[in-house]
Image (cartoon, rainbow, N blue to C red):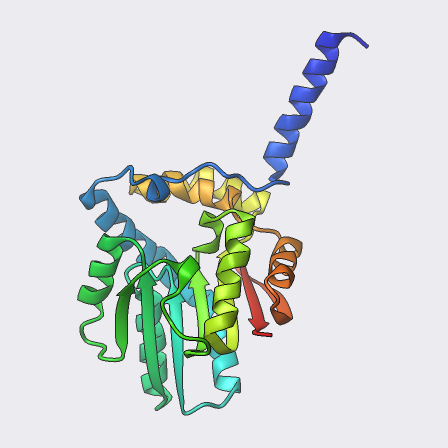
Length: 252
């Protein structure tokens, strides 16, 4: 076999592997590099709220996390949401808890200053939501400060070692449960997003970062492995339509 043919087959195998999304991408998103304007960021948050309300994390949260909290039968609970963005999920939890007559203490943690400001401003009607600006890999809270710790569409921004550190921090500060909602790295999801998604999505960050986010997402075995490395117990990974994975675990 000639060298040229070997190179051709090697390149073809790389293309096939890329298309099948067998490996996570580590390419940085615009939100990671800060390559966006204030107007683009505001538009990104608004568009993500619309998406998540019907097809994204809010739906996944209702079908998994809130059901778990309700099953634990607590009349009051505390929850930390790391990488909370503008706090859309926290406000959803606050409304759910109010309907259930459950006292909820909700903390949204963000390192991004704009997101922290947005979280405070948009959550003013909810006295039980607090915004904290800090690093999720070094949480400024004492051990077992919360009943639950969670993140949504946050873990895929990190490499594996950092994700293990994040999960360890969750296991340190949470007494009851750890939840991670993120993207299922699935070829169908990627193809749909890069074709039909471009027709209905308008914000540059959502269009471009969203496709890359899927490539940076996870397969279920990968989440099981990361949770085990972090020392979490009773680990489950659930699939929720459309193309969401939810890691559910208990601190050791």
